[in-house]
Amino acid sequence: MAAVWHPTTLAIRDCTDGHYHFVDHQRYLDAWFEAVGIRQKVTLVVHDWSSALEFSWAQRHPNSVRAIVYVEAIVRRFKSWNESPVKERSRGQRQSTAAGEDLILNKNVFIEYLLP
Image (cartoon, rainbow, N blue to C red; front, side, top):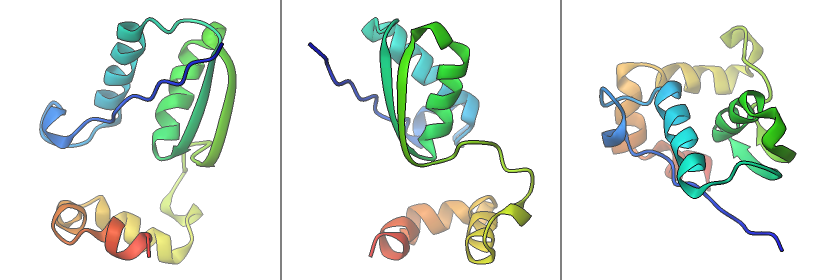
C-alpha cells in the first residue's frame, strides 16, 4: 500500500531573517522527512520552484528515492537571466529586488497575473 505525504512550505515568518532562502527551505524539508520517518522507496512528485528542493533532497539521499515525477519543474540551475524568456526575465528580476516583496505580498502578482 502506498501513502501520500505532502509537506507544507515555509511561511516567510519561519525563515531565519524574514526572507525566503533556499537553505531555509532545504533544512525545513530535511526535518520534515525526518519527522515523518520517510527514509526509503520515496516517489517524489514535484512542481514549479519547489522542485529544486526535492531534486536537491533526492541528490543528497539517492538511496531513498524510488522515482521522481515532475511537471513544470526547475531541472537545473540557470546560468544567467539571459536563459529566461524576456517577458519572464524582467518579472523574475523584479521579484528578486526589494520591490519583489510588494509585488508578491501586496499586489498579489501570482494570483492576479499568473493564474487567470
